[in-house]
Length: 100
Image (cartoon, rainbow, N blue to C red; front, side):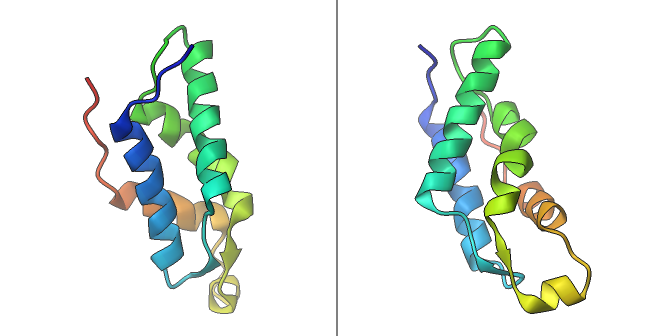
């Protein structure tokens, strides 16, 4: 059994909320996307030999799990921005929680 601390869950929610507010994105991450990222982070923790998740697990997998779920604004496509690059920039702007 792998534990996902509240701080890590909040971090995932903050990422999803930021995608919903970003003007470059027409359709952001849904609750199902949050669940998918949580499960992926927990699996990564397990494969790393831990029974708890870290923000690093989230950061490592967020783009892989979430990018295809974004629907970009037309202007973003015209400017040549990719889902991955936009998501990466969003993640960089969110404060990483301290987990003990």
